[in-house]
Image: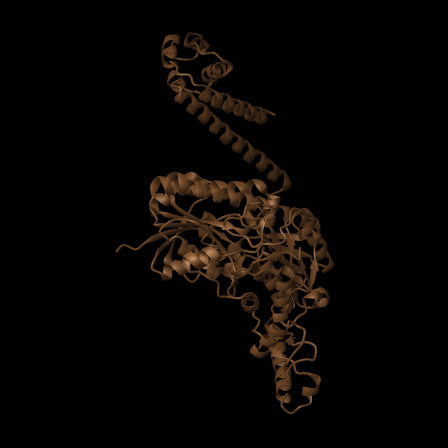
Length: 637
């Protein structure tokens, strides 16, 4: 029996990595579509696939290019295809509606078309979203609930859902859609509110931050574990008939509850650290989403197993371990989860109002149980206190002898498309502090002010894509800015980047030791000239594309201008095209438009212009000619 092949888009994401692990364990030959930059930079882009990297075949392609999608599908010929890739951050979809719609809708259409044309037997899964319901008419939402999306992301998902259903009904594809409600895990992206909360808890515990800014704390969501939701995806494609399913837990919790439980798990009061930020509110808020997965339970036999409390605890502990923090003692953790910082039921080892841990400041933070004042005098607690003091002295000594910093007034920045992470010395020399800022200009100005408050003199940042340009222009006015090649970071032993906060801290540490070299940055006049040359090259490429479109329209009408003249883009060719677009149809009148330098006679040219006029192709010709003329005017301006 042949090994079944599976093709997964979005394989580097949370759902894609869990699904790949599940299918490999079931004996599938796994293939994934990734961007070319991910293959060229696996340390940053493929961290979620680290455990199965050798078992997955990755193909470079873009969902915005049908040609590349067609090529991958033809090469793999999958038995099952899971379309998970999308621009999935809802808040970002408000900022860049065009790219969200283009990537999410066209990507789905291209993949469906390729599957239909090449491997129609392939079973197809489309990843829907609870954001499609938006301002729903009923609670809970089922497969029959009317869609009322409140974001560009939700609209694009509704379009993809309808495309999938249309291909199922019109072409007989085994195409199913899963309307998945919010599903989280330690692999969730840092831009999502759940991971933002749990990573914020870990940074506060590590002393790297003191404040966590959030949006609408009263928004209610149906949260489950992503590892279990991908099982439902697989079960949908094992059914005899394709269908659409809601996948959810049926329970709702507010963002405030998530934050309260996450901070309580670490022995903290969220009210002391969380502050609402009006800038993080959505323009069109969705206040309540709750799913009814009765159909999935009845037909697929699927149900969720991980509760809300266990999900939050797992995410908090994973982020703490990523920063080198040990997990809290089990008895303290259970007490906090049971009482939610309201009342403690343990007799010894807990304070009267809450059950807490106490961080010992050191190079590598460790968590120890903090006895109450009465227990400090007890004989049982004295060895604990003595060991705490000994650990503090030993770690302080190691830190003094192992810190090679040569310059304290430097900062490191890890750049992203939506958030920038900055590491700098804390106020008063209190260790390093990591803070994230947005990518908008007001946020960049606020970043500069934040660095000024800490008397920073030099800043090092990754030269990632085009994301460095705006921060560089804002910061170079007040600081010395070094653009660092990412490969420099990997050459120094000790680099084990797992998260963006870790990366910016590593940059700051290397910069403080003088181990980073800035990339070459030409003078402003050279940059401007290079931009102009690049822009002209882009215009030439666009112009050539519209010439090809005009040629295609003429070929479809059997007007063989390229046979009549050697250069269709020359004087004679463009004169004929302009005349045809203006309404001239007589080949005898088009032929005299030849330039005197043209080698062919009027009779030879007229013979090649035998026409088969069609209004739709003439319309395309006129549109292409107008675009060509517009680009020509821009180039001569």
